[in-house]
Length: 295
Image (cartoon, rainbow, N blue to C red; front, side):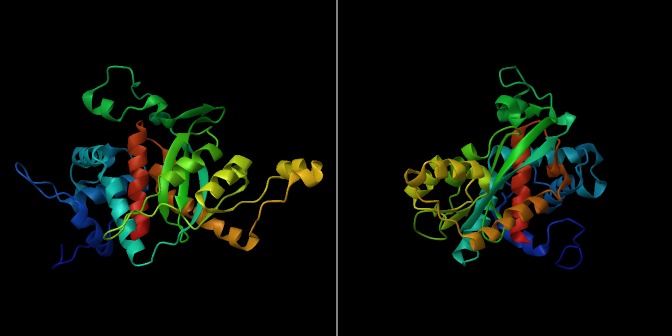
């Protein structure tokens, strides 16, 4: 600590980001005081950035058990998601959120350390049982264990919503749950905003039922038609109907979701999944999303 400001190390929370995060963290109550929140958050970020085991945490960040316990506690009470939601609300209030949503998915290889979590029906330790879900979103294929990240970003490529599935899961079935999870509250009275102006998608999401669902919700869908769907429509002649509207110029903006995946995977702990529990991996993605919003 030098004067009233903190010397920020590589990959640590900046003063600007900390000014947004600190008011959202719990304060010490009765009993022992919390270890410095900023030190612990920097410890968690070090883990995310390096992908190293907790026990290798450098001494300057304090005991690794303290950092892991804080991660566990705030994952359990949903604090990470609350912080992300609050950050998005504040930016939306000043017009910083662009409601042109791009959606895509990316498969992440799961390390062998991610396997072996106690099954949901087994009698695990009390802490572990809190987060147990069936399968832990781990898929098995010839490539080994994997998890798929389904991501929706705003027009500036910042994460709005993240869902996890096993690696072999399809993209299209997750689109509506992903969009349903977008809910940005108002910085004042009023109902949360949930409906984007436009959703930009690749061909994996091109399905008549998806297009119908978007029409019913009043959401403009920019998605190229698959070749097999185009051929099937052509075979029917005039009964095949018109081709779906497609804005090729607007579709070029879809690259923002690819760039967001690239930024998320700069965190090595996210580029390869090491966490046994999907709750911890989801929390890690949320923490990384917070940092991307505050850059």
